[in-house]
Length: 138
Image (cartoon, rainbow, N blue to C red; front, side, top):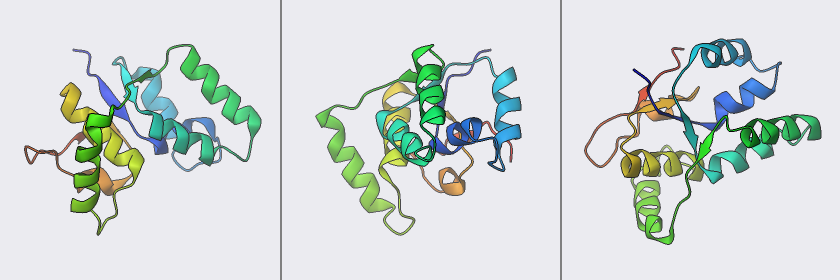
């Protein structure tokens, strides 16, 4: 069965930076993953910032998106309350905009899986007290 999964900035950055310690793991995972990859504009912004050392890497990343590798889901102004509440709840972690945007979309779209290299998603719970399942086995 095909699983839709959110994808965080870490694995995307690793995919486009061959020197990243997760590059081989992410590349191998994505070569066999058959589900739909879903992310948000805050994640894309974060990846572009992390890749700012190379305009070529940024262009390759944008081309990858343009070819349909990732589905972008947008936020609306009605999501701001959720975002503020979650950032406040996890202020001791802290929860950044990219992470909270993914948690918000997970609830709106009922997505239970994430692809991330960060341990933060083993801390964050949705409004129902559930964790996302990280498909990237670290």
